[in-house]
Amino acid sequence: MTDMSGRAVLEMKHITKSFSGVTALNDVSFSAYEGEILALCGENGAGKSTLMKILSGSYPEGSYEGQIFVNGNLCRFASPAQSEKMGIGMIYQEISMHLDLTVAENIFIGRWPIKGRKVDWKEMNEQAVTFMELVGLQAEPDMILRQMSASQQQLVSIARALSKDPKILVLDEPTSPLTQKESRMLFEILHSLKERGIACILITHKMEEVFENADRVTVLRDGNIISSCRLSETCEKKVITDMVGREISNYYPKEKAEIGDVVMEVKDFSVPHPSIPNRKIIDQVSFQLHRGEILGIAGLVGAGRSELVNAIFGKDPRLSGEIWIDGRKASIKSPADAMKNGIALLTEDRKKDGIVAEMSIRENLTMPLLEKVSRNGIMDRKREKDISRRYFEELGVKAPGTETLMRQLSGGNQQKVVLGKWIARDPKILILDEPTRGIDVGAKYEIYKIMVKLAREGKGIIMISSELPELMSMADRIMVISDQRIRGILKEGEWTQEKIMELSAMWETPVTNAGGHES
Image (tube, rainbow, N blue to C red; front, side, top):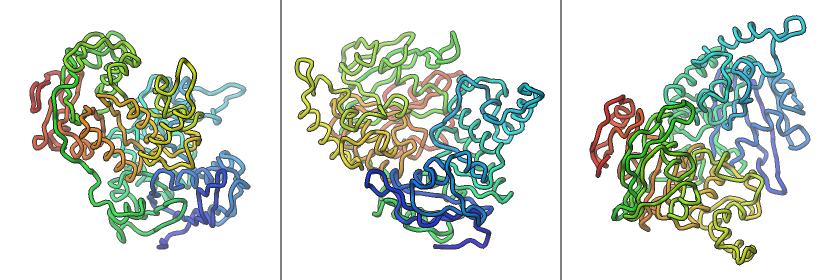
């Protein structure tokens, strides 16, 4: 271990935690120092979130072994409220906010200013503006959260944490829902907090965030501390090797697949804006997808990428347009229609509409396969178990078994199950909306390999991603959407990050036939 010259504001000593006999943390000792940004890295399931839930009081003393010291004082947290009182602020990857309250009400929840016997709304809104400006949130303090985007909601959660004047700030994948501009602003905030002596613990799978912002990195694997050192003493390759337990020579295992005939054609597609009446988010979009092709879709947050694929799948409404599968016009008015036509969709938010958390891996894997695992309306339990076991093993899901509940899995393993349930249907067309968001390098690599295998089997794959290196490494063509339209379709060799960003920022005048087959 490498010590810092500053004062340790947090020490977690010999922490051990088990779930149903499975060890999640094994004698972990962990420190954070005054005025540092410490990156905590590890694969999904490595124990990072468990360690931070112990620190936050979500797992109270008595449910684990070991000790916690804050500023040298032994702490016994029975609840998150006690952890907060000791100056520990938490910002979680999964946004947990009160959607029907205002921005100001969310920032000061449980601490609303009182004047006489009433809430001082004027004072609360004025105080909220201070913290909104701090995080760069451009909105009114009395705006209802439900009307805001996921990235704006995340900025509110960060403002709420900062309003409590934390001495230790824990951020779990904080940039996952943020735009690049918002992410840059967040790290500017973290560096200003660092100058004020606040210890920031950054949990992230994005290596560029680690090496551009952190002072130290600590790596967890399988519940054990593997390494802890200054960033100047390590490199990205070493950190990733420590995380996954093996060397990954090529992060993007793309292999050429034979590009075949057109499997799907979308013609003159228009989609209504989800929150602005009488406005389109997609207008007269046309494109083709070929067998064996990975078609990437790029664009800024709010460009309409998810709305387009959701409408193709019948999940969201469309105003106009046609879908042709294998040269035949398909009638798709619902997800059931899409599935009958050989289309599968892995949605952007797996927790919202990808998994049923309180059901088992077996039940989640076979949920879209009821016709295959039942006879005359009666479940064939043996066939259900056989199919779930097959995909559980093929996808390398890390869990005790198929009866494990989905909520007990890490994000990466949940994503594998969601992918598995669609692969089990043997679709012609697989749409992946941010398939690697919030998962670790090792799990990403495994999902990339699955994509390559499916493409080589002749599946047509559409991949939405906000990570441009990922798109440029995995796609055969990249379609860029901005301001309701396709601004360009680029082939390998034609794209650069700058070119994609330039097209993503285009406005009003659509570009047609910018590489590729057509737009």
